[in-house]
Image (cartoon, rainbow, N blue to C red):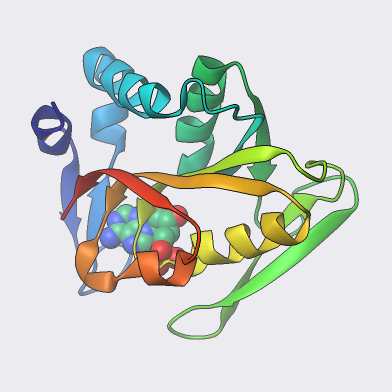
Length: 172
Ligand code: AMP
């Protein structure tokens, strides 16, 4: 089932910098049958799990997250880079290879006790999704799962998301 999905992802060597093998999901998303299969497989996993919100991480997480939310009849919440959200925000900073990065979420985006799935295209070191999980956990959300299209196993990002459950459709 996922073999074809895997084949539709493009490898781009040395992007955004030398030594990184970029897993480009745009080649999957532009194929109607592949995009539909991806959304169906993720959706199937969470149907009946009482998901209130899908939290999408800028920017490819918006594509995955909003399609999944629609499938589940859930709402969608945006986690964005600094300065993009217009209302009051909570912020989370996380370490990069060099320096730090910050993500923001609207303070009123999640109500205590809401059941959320966090969605992004790819789990690498887990820094990004880990920061988002920490943020929504502090806001009182129940994290049903962190869902990704792709997981890079050797970077062990799952560890950073512990104790929250993690699911990925495709692993490398
Ligand atoms: P990380 O915080 O290390 O788990 O990195 C995850 C974020 O960076 C995701 O939002 C991905 O879109 C992006 N990313 C990291 N590594 C790659 C890669 N090899 N290919 C595509 N996207 C990546």
